[in-house]
Length: 160
Length: 184
Image (cartoon, rainbow over all chains, first blue to last red):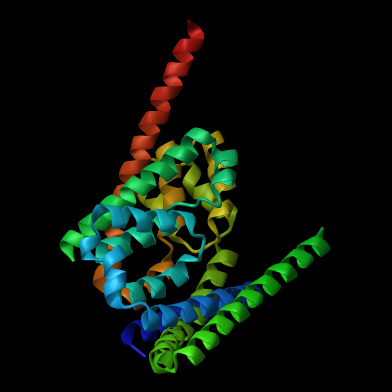
């Protein structure tokens, strides 16, 4: 266990105790919701964790870094960003995946681009976004988000 | 209607666990063909599993608490009447609260725009909702480190604000154009 884990758990515990003192019924509802969403996300977590194991075990770092590493260039980054935009996996689970990619030779730029497009852009939810907010706003938001994600990724690569 | 929902949920659960089984079978097959890889794959997966299982319950509890405590009405109330720098930061803060998936935010945003809220603030709110969730930042901190998480957070906030203001300008400009065309 590292300090981040301890911090997260203590923080949540304090929130929970505070909530419990304020309103028991509401806290109970929150906990039921938490248990439900926990069991809903567990299968996806297991799948990603197995895939991470296989990825690190079978795909050599040199291959990963060729596609998404330092030498992949702008093309590689855009490719990863596109993947992030299309994929529909919970952001929570994308972080261990991103960490494993980093460990096995992916560049910071590629990983940052992947996470940012994954969270900011929703291809699956785009029809709903268009319906609620109109074509103009929805397409502008998703399109510009893609460009922003690439810019953020390259700035991060330059700094870190 | 409720029964329909339950049926649908059951199907999703079945599908998800089906996918888990398929992945497991693939892993077992691969590992029995290449036994020399067993150790690396299993220790890696196990390490990530332990890391995940230590934070996931806490993250879920936090999301549950916020979902129940911060209602849609609260968000609408605060976001509807704000402006200026304070409005921007309130939009980011309200968006960052873990109160549900993105598709919940679309109708809230649409309702606020119809009520006359600033488009830039609503877009900042939507983007914050999509990518700056508090529990999400915690998991990012856990797996990618403080530097990575903090830098990405700051850059995202800056660029999301720029995007919000920019899209508002574009929308206002194109609305003006259509009004002019209609007058002609």
